[in-house]
Image 1 (cartoon, rainbow, N blue to C red):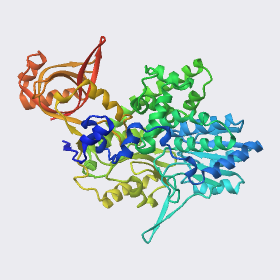
Image 2 (cartoon, rainbow, N blue to C red):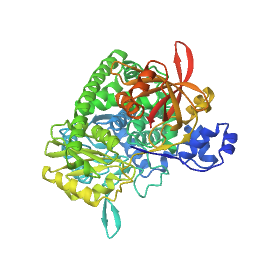
Image 3 (cartoon, helix red, strand yellow):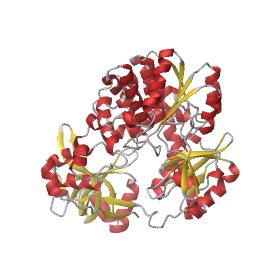
Image 4 (tube, rainbow, N blue to C red):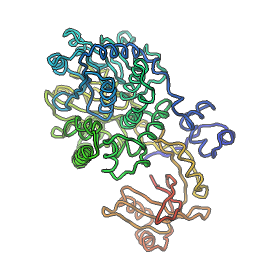
Length: 586
């Protein structure tokens, strides 16, 4: 059972509310997101294009733009090397489209997840040389490619790296020696000597910044560079970057652009998923549209997703959107099977005693490892690595919890891997099969995670009685969007809520609609999407079968619960009413 705790951060909520014309509830939520001081609150509430940082502050970005401008002028062949996930696909699209707009002699290559693995490799470098390429530009990868960069330089190629991943380092005597590849230019805000003030950009946002500088240098209007803002925003959400600081402004502006996009592929993908332009939110990017782009790189080739974005007419775009939709449906089915196998392993073996889960599923499609790791992490609230057999050994992905930096912990046993990389919250790796047991042993032996770290915790933003909910307040909460990592949807709670009636809906019986009443006598609809059978079993265990049956007949039953919820305005046949969406109960 998760621990419920109320956020107790202090501020003058009344004063903030008066200065910014917002409810004290909204002011409290903003403070809970660690937004402190009027300037930061203003940027949070009203931030936009004016709050973007100057791209020229990024280390090597002017150098990289200068190199590309020279190569464009000389007609040299440029190849963009990307990655097969949402961020990689959007990064390639931005750079490829921008360089084509500059009349560049440019093409692209995206590694195949299974045969190539992540990022630039020796085969791709040699292939570029054979194809007469003069300059390689990486995006969303390259910062860990020391050997591959050295090979490219030996072969006489120019190399420009654009990336956002952690810079590899060697630790000796308590000091870190960062290992930046010897490329002609390295654009990555995570470099320790990069003065760029915001470090959490995704790969596509770094590519977008480079295009801004290149277009300025070549005399193109900045409005043209801003045309790629929707792609950078899509990737920021899809790559689960924190929606704080510049990322928040970037995604707010990018979603506006996405909702009026003229890109045939984006429009077709929204149509196929029954999402109207004008209604696309960060949620749709993260959980509906983004997974369709990702599915191509997982189960087939990411080039299909790129071809969708590059489609030149509605008919072609619709064809690619249909393919990606179908691939995503297959991916969902395979994910359910894999997640079931992973859970069975945890429950049926000594794994459940581990603080860091290392789950080996030899037959799993390797592209699903990260998704399943995320699912298992949510269920058991601990860091999870899911490994599967691939070409040349074992490959896998990890998903972490806030208290555990995967990249740091993997760096302590890096001799076990062929390759590894990533962020504090997510990682990828490959290693010899014989090292799997040792990997699990080392991570669990060396971890400093405590039992308290592993107890799931729900932080309540505002304990708010249902009586306080109004339509104006629900409308006002939209100023907190876009929601995502580090700017999660607010969490409200109320206790002693009476259940007056309940109905189970949906062909899979996965929706429970209730009428409830607060302690103050306020009646309202409540809806619960989740494990409905578990919810009913909980009620029966607590109150018995009769009260549950009475509630199902609409006759109350004397049952009351505490709910964690989010308020909404429900529209049915043109009529509006307030309701709460129940997230947790006890």
